[in-house]
Image 1 (cartoon, protein in one colour):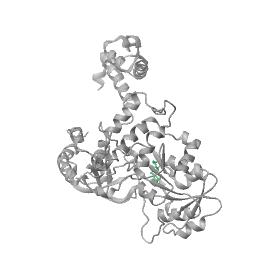
Image 2: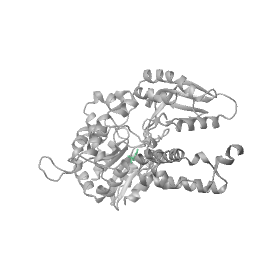
Image 3: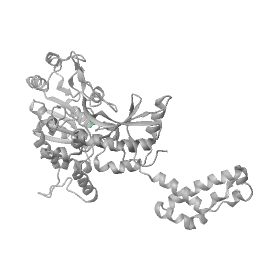
Image 4: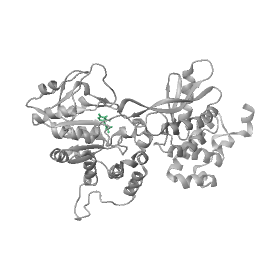
Length: 476
Ligand SMILES: *Cc1c(COP(=O)(O)O)cnc(C)c1O
C-alpha cells in the first residue's frame, strides 16, 4: 500500500484542481446537463473540500484528482440524491392491503383519469350545464348513492377525517354512545376515544369488552345524547362468551328516541364478497338498509380506490356535515376524485369486478396461478440466495389487511427460506431480508418461525419476469 502511494502517486493540497477548471472539463459536462450548475457546483465544493482535508492529512492518490474521477464521484453523489424517495417495491408480505406499503393499487382507468386531471384543466367545481359554480362532491355523490342505496353522500381525505367530521358536525358538546367492545385503535394513532375528544363529543361507553346488550344502549340515552354509534372491529375479533347489538337493533333504539344511528364501517365494501369466494363482510348497502342513518368508510381498503373517507346516509345529516367548516379543511383534491370516479364506475358491472378491480383481482387470485409461480421461482431464489439457504415452495395464508376481516385468511402459495447451516438462523435470515430489501425494486417479505416468507399472491404474472431478472445473479 505504502509503495503504491509513494512518490509521484501522492498529491498535495496545491495539486487539487480549481472549481473553474473542473466546471469546464469535458468529464463534468454530462453531470451539468443532468443536474444543473447549482447542484454540480455544490457537489464539487464538497468533493474538493474532502480532497483538501485528506491531502493536508497526509496525501491523496493522484488519480483521484483526475477530472474523470471527480466527475464520477460527483455524478454518483448527485444521482443518489436525486433517486426517488417513494419507490416501487414488491409486496410479498402476504398482506394485500398493506397500510405501510400504500394499501390499494388502482386500476388502469383510475390511473389514466388521474393523469388527465393532473395535466389538463377540468370541471372540478364548474357546472358544465349552467356555466356556474359547481360542487366537487357532485362528481361522485350520485354514484355513491346508487351503489349504497343512501340518500346523499360526501367525501373527505380519509376515513379518520370522515369520523372526525361526522362527530364534530353532529355531536359537538354532546354525547355519543358506543359499546366498550368497539373502542377500536387502528394503527397509526387513530383511537375512537381520542378522535371523539378532538371532535368535541363526549364518549359514553356502554357494556363490557365482551358483551353489550340493547338495554346498555337504552339506559345510556339522556338529554345530551347526540347519537348511537357502532364501530367495525377492524383489526381484532372478540370471541368466546360474547354479545353485541346489531346495526338494526341499535338503529331501532336510536330512532325510538329520535336520534341518529351511525356506523364507522372501516374498510367498507360495496359488494357481497362471498360471490367471489371471500369471507362475508357487511356491505355499505346492507348497513344503510339495516337502518344506519350515516355510514363512514375508507376509499383505499376493500373498495380498492384512492385514499379517501366516504360518508353516506340521510340527506339532512349529509347537508349538515357539508356545512361544517371542517369539511373544507378535510376536502379531497382533484386527484382523489379523478381516481375515485372510475373505481366506483367499475362497481356498476360487478360481473367484471374480479378482473378489473386490482384489489379484488389480487384477493381472488387462484392457487392454480400462484402455486406454479412459486415452483418456477423457487430455483431462481435458491440460486440468488446461495448455498447457505434452503428455499421451498410451500402453501401459506395471505391476509386481506387494513383491518378488513382480521381473522379470515386466504389460502396462498409462496417461498419459505430457511438457513441451511448451523448457528443461529435469525442473523442469516435478517441478512437475506436486508439483501432483498436493498434490491433496485426492494422485495418485502416477512420473517416468522425461523423462516423468511415470500407470499406470491401479489406478484402478478406480468411482473414475474422483472422480478426474476433482479435475482438472476447471486445476491451480494
Ligand atoms: C381503517 C379504519 C379507520 C381509518 O380509516 P383511514 O381511511 O385509514 O383514515 C377508521 N375506522 C375504522 C373502523 C377503520 O377500520
